Amino acid sequence: MEPPSPTKPTRKDARDNRERILNVAREALAASGSTSLTAIAKQAGVGIGTLYRHFPTREALVLELYRNDIQHLIDRPPVLLDAHHPVDALRLWFTEIAHYGRLKFAVADVIHAATNDGRDDENYGPFLRSLALLLDAGAADGSLKPGLDPEDVLLQLSVLWRIDPARGGEERAARILDLIVDGLRRPAV
Image (cartoon, rainbow, N blue to C red; front, side, top):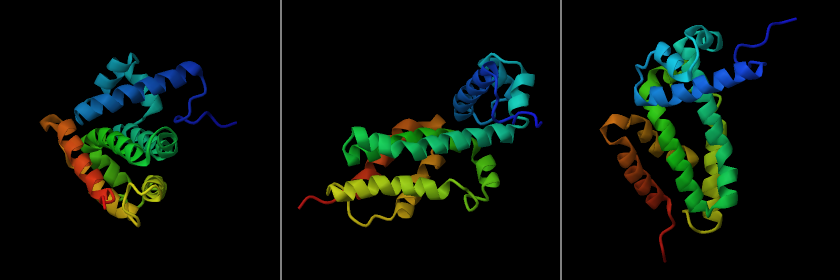
């Protein structure tokens, strides 16, 4: 019998510890990419050994955060479209991406190395399909320009992970997102 996978703990307390570590690490690394694993363990209320059992390296922790956050973003568009007008759903999704951008800014070197600068990222296609879902809904109701290319829009969004959160990042991201959304809107006739 194989031992349980270190990324999928089976005991409730182990799952709770893992989630707490991820939640603390997400905020701590977004605030400062140089936050130590010891500081993360302490803030999460676990010993450093517990952190290392779940994430044997700093890179393993960063990549698990990346996978969780990207999967969350991939899953959000249908939920947002069920509750909001397409342009509002798109803007809300972009805001979530901007929040994720704070983490990516701090640890981009690890993510880019692991994904070959995005070329080997298994999440790329699903992420583009999620974006296309939002763009298509806006085009269908006439609020967004028809025929928008999701890769072009993603390229525009990539500026978000270049904004330094310590230098007015949230305000700047909001202004940039307003510019992007305004550029995607169908002009009034």
